[in-house]
Length: 187
Image (cartoon, rainbow, N blue to C red; front, side):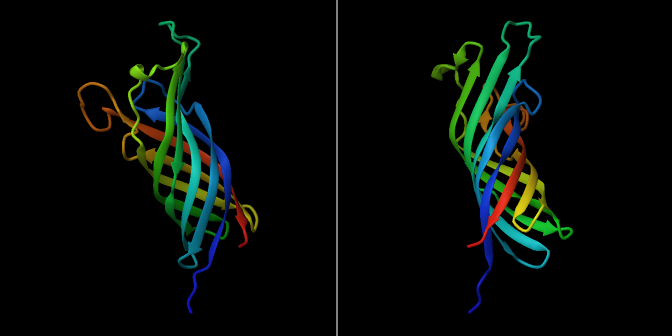
């Protein structure tokens, strides 16, 4: 019979994230990325892969020059993501990755100078997220790889309060840069 050869392993790394649509700029919210992956070769140069990861995302501002008295703002979002993507090997050690990453929000909290936001002060987050992803994979050894990726929400993580003006201006979107190490395990 015909059988597919699958390989897989574990993933660990760090995220730098921001939320487009809030009033803060910059990838100032660090987070972790932990999980596993499985992939299979479709041809000599193309592979398909899927991951299951715990991802920390959000937004952060600590402005020492704030004039309104409020200095701290932190949005902590914890997701379970299931990226599905294709990889195209451009050389023996480098591949370009592109795909989609659906995610489910485990929890989302916001903090300011006075602590955690009260429930009535929070604008609720959407439970489902869908991000487009683009990245690069570098092979360091037979078992060790490094991924550098960017991902951006195609669906809003939450709607802004008030009347919608325009889809991209009236909602908040997750914007993520991720660096992970993949370690291949033999099954």
